[in-house]
Every structure is written in structure tokens, then in C-alpha cells.
Image 1 (tube, rainbow, N blue to C red):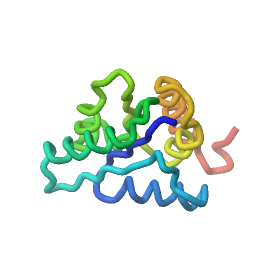
Image 2: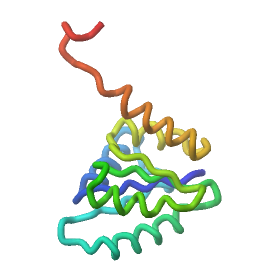
Image 3: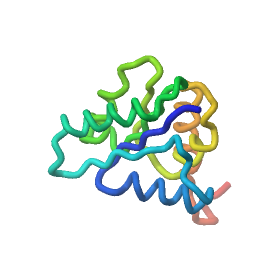
Length: 132
């Protein structure tokens, strides 16, 4: 089973994982969160991220989901993606996280694609006149 690490501002990652618990009834053992706050030292967060990746990697790799590309959490996440079996995707949202949590046995490239598709496909207009 692949690991999943959510790297996000403040408590966003924890909130997303709490929503996973609400939907699925429990948080899978292969999911962890690295919260990054405004005053955090990025080097310290990088060290914490490395520790979480080591904890999560049981031989199938780790998919890292970050919030905003270019912000500190995604910069930390990007620096964690140097091993071949570690992949990252920015723009994490709940549909993205739920989809990857439900497919932990996929390969890293497949999981990254599932994350991207899940995030994109679930952004839809909600006004009846805009739906086709």
C-alpha cells in the first residue's frame, strides 16, 4: 500500500483528513499530514517531511499532495519528491484526496493521475442553467 502525505497551510490538511474520516468512517493508516504555519522554519518542516515519508514508505512509495503550488508547503513537498518512488501533486482538494485514499494499491504514476483527475473532475458548476 502506498503512503499519502498531505502538506498544507495551517490546519487545512488536518481538516481534509478529518473529512475523509467523516466519509469513510476512519482515516486509513497510510495517510499523514504535515501542517505548515507562517512562522515555521521551512528546513525544520523539510526534516519533519522526510521523517513522515520514511514512516509512510512501505515499499510502494508515497504520494505527496500539497495545497498551493509555489507556496511554502508545496516548496517543502517538492523537495521531498527526489526519490523515484515519491511523487507530488499540488492543488489538493477533498475529491482528490478521497480518490487516492480509495486506490492505495495503484502505482505512483497511476495515483498521481487519479489525484489530478479527481481534483479536476469534481470542479463543476452547480447552477442548473450551467449544467449540460
